[in-house]
Length: 253
Image 1: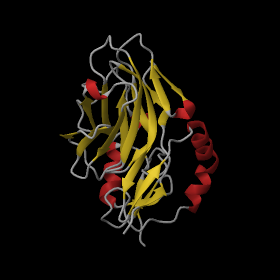
Image 2 (image 1 turned 120 degrees about the vertical axis):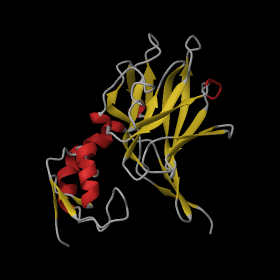
Image 3 (image 1 turned 90 degrees about the vertical axis):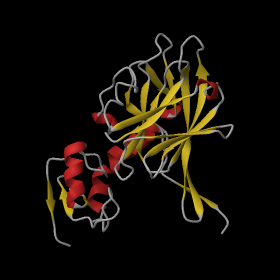
């Protein structure tokens, strides 16, 4: 079969959770770190990403006075619940819920494009625009929700989100960068309506193997009992709407 393109959910940098030296521009698609320091440039994706969803970045600006260039990885903890230390490595990666990989300086020159993803075996793979790849095993569980983590560190001072792509059965889904302010406005206006209209999921959205048989305190019926316990203890938020979880109750289909 010939491959076809299909749109996927748009993606941008998280507008509210970012290092203290980071500023956003271009509708949330570009992040810039103040050059007064090599750190405090931690950023995240504005939404959870899927296993083997390839995120694409372009390095826009660099400052050769610093050592190191960029750290890329993923987090099981939502950005809103993540403390913001100066650096991803080692400050966050001391926890098995966070993983990041050092990107070599020579592929982080201005204009370079970089692609990275979490593979099904839990490893992080980085691919440079010249075709070279680097894969590093992590402690992450690819069946759990993850957010992309981009540490704009060292020489790299500005990065643009180019979108993402993901191979499916006979086509490739592609997403464009989101306009952050539009995305948040839509979320605020439609969140309650979507919650009321969302039907009970037949399949658990966390493990994709068990039947969803738990009602969360936000009203969503989207996880099995073991995953409800795991999500409640480790994340504290609904995997669909990200509302804080007060409780969960099994229900009968």
